[in-house]
Image (cartoon, rainbow, N blue to C red; front, side, top):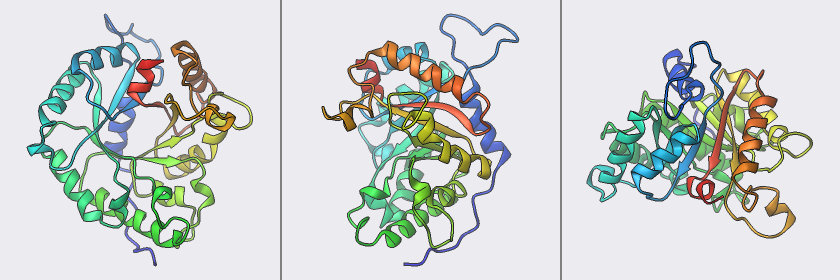
Length: 291
């Protein structure tokens, strides 16, 4: 299936400023940041469940979370979740935390109009600062049998969702997407970067530097983001993934909150000079709080 060529999503200064504002702003519990103090990169986290809004925002503030990716159902204005989302948005904004509408339906690759309708309904509430897609094409049932078709559908999805909003569009990407070709003649991560405003690379490892580490896996995506002029976060995992060595190296589950905090600070330090590096994201809020 050929890729429908559409104009690349431009590097829009206003939108990039909005995205970077979330990454450079520091939330300091109990008072303002001293004048002249450097602003370390903030964190982001996925919120799939429905935790109590007050404790969620209090916790997020203490963890220096600058953005919440909040899972949003279809037809949010008529959903029973609306009151909860409104409460989270109100409290988060009061605390200086951005809120993005999080969507994650693999079938949108085949039916992008459904994603556009989901986004339209979510943004109509006025509760969000942007859109965050966690649509993973490698989970599509045809990934191994018709990869070119899935890739084309995925890029078309990003085109249509991006064209339907002026708010920042950020997407989750696998660190290995630079190995997947597209009909456009560029790697998939580059094709994605030209269509969105920001990337979150799922660099799920529990070491900071060295071979097969968070920063090692993140470098190809960061290079792509730099070339596209787009910010990129590196993400880590906190959920239980299994007991085998491969699963264990992909998550901070069982290692404690201190180990995660040390690692996040280490990533910030290691990538301090990287032009595209926009901080870290932690999957997910429930796993992080349970450490």
